[in-house]
Length: 242
Image 1 (tube, one colour):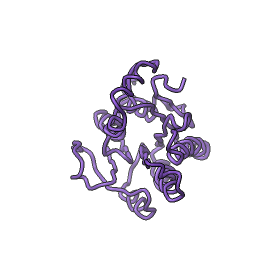
Image 2: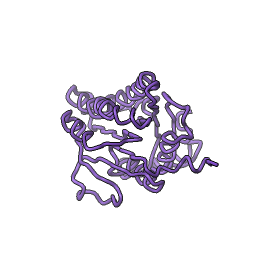
Image 3: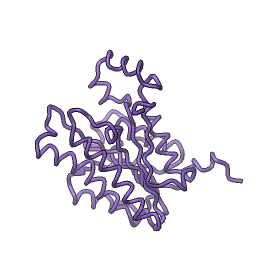
């Protein structure tokens, strides 16, 4: 008899996570690894430039602005069961209001994600696999100084829905996860202790999320427990957008 816990066993499944060198992506990678999956991840720098432990994972440096590099990266694989797009570049000091900055962020966060999906389509069709895109609550409530980041994440929601419609009959499910405030090195360093405490006082669940909170949602959507869910945006924000 197959139990619900059995459906969270990813033994003999290959999970590719783009943008997993740190933060949310790394949390997702370690959770899949703990569930038996073969895990391949990407980052923007050489592997020895990171402090995290990548034991048991295959690491690839990847620049999502480089179309040829994405094609080459995808050619390394013969089986992929789950593709997780967890890339979220952002620019500060109002650089996203300039055309060059705006195009850069759209190219990485949205166009790069689209190419990853299409490059891995044949392998996902062969495995009956699925895609999970990490967008953000800024797809619902835009970020004040980041128009490109906000637009790219909103575009990622519609991209997920469009691919779910197109590829559903090919056996591929496509879903999105929208994190709220997540405690990572990047976000903690960009907010004061007072801001973090204020968020805890106003959010329905009075704390920031952890990468593991987001990873749990991704693993659920990737598993057979979610076999009849596609084209969905799962918001994981502790009630932030209520």
